[in-house]
Length: 119
Image 1: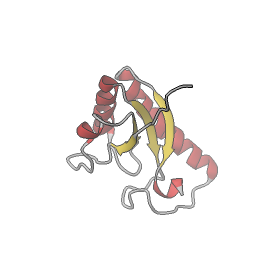
Image 2: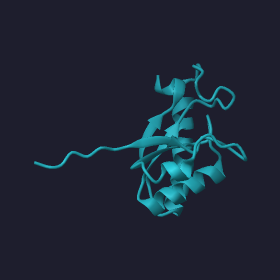
Image 3: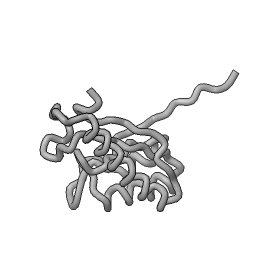
């Protein structure tokens, strides 16, 4: 019998520019996986890179938190997007995060939809 394993995760990198929603540094000290915002509802390249760097340093799994292209509504508004366009936008978000994860010595290991895309 093996010991049970619990994955504690949190949504991180949900800010952009000078604005920050979460205390990513503190959360990365306690979580085992990080759902990193990929720029369509929150997040920007600098934030994504910083969170990936810290996650890799601390052995935290990196996941792509993808959403509809909805910064103004924080990804929480339902949108009528053609399936092929939505698939391309999701691939774009995952690819952007994968670049930063690889640069930090990590990989994107899962995808977590956000907001209206999750519902």
